[in-house]
Structure formats: C-alpha cells, structure tokens
Image (cartoon, rainbow, N blue to C red):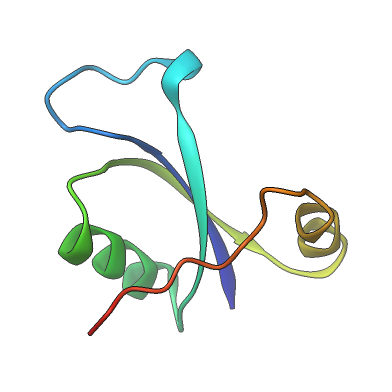
Length: 72
C-alpha cells in the first residue's frame, strides 16, 4: 500500500503547519511505514495517511509525487 507521511524536518522544534512536508512510500502496514521513516531519517512524523483508489489517483497527478525508497 502507498502511504503519505506528513512530517517536520527535525524533532527539535514544535510542529508548525506552514513547515509541514510530505513524502510518499510503499509499505505493508502503517506501522511499517512509520518504522521505515524513523529508521532512515530524523523527521518528526505528524501523520501517516494510507492512499488508495481516487485518493491515490489524485496524489499521483501531483508533479511532486514520487515514491521515496530507503536503502536497506
């Protein structure tokens, strides 16, 4: 499944809506998606949203859409 992960660049500052960023990744579960991001970045995860159906189609039309892959 594809997940959209909303995050802040660093865990040192309080989250601010204006600086929230996102990435897309493929994982088996939401827990696996969180683990991938936590193990490979210093991001402060705000929310993880599963994408499927029309929601996924809409996101894929965004020019900034690309799946993030982490080296294992």
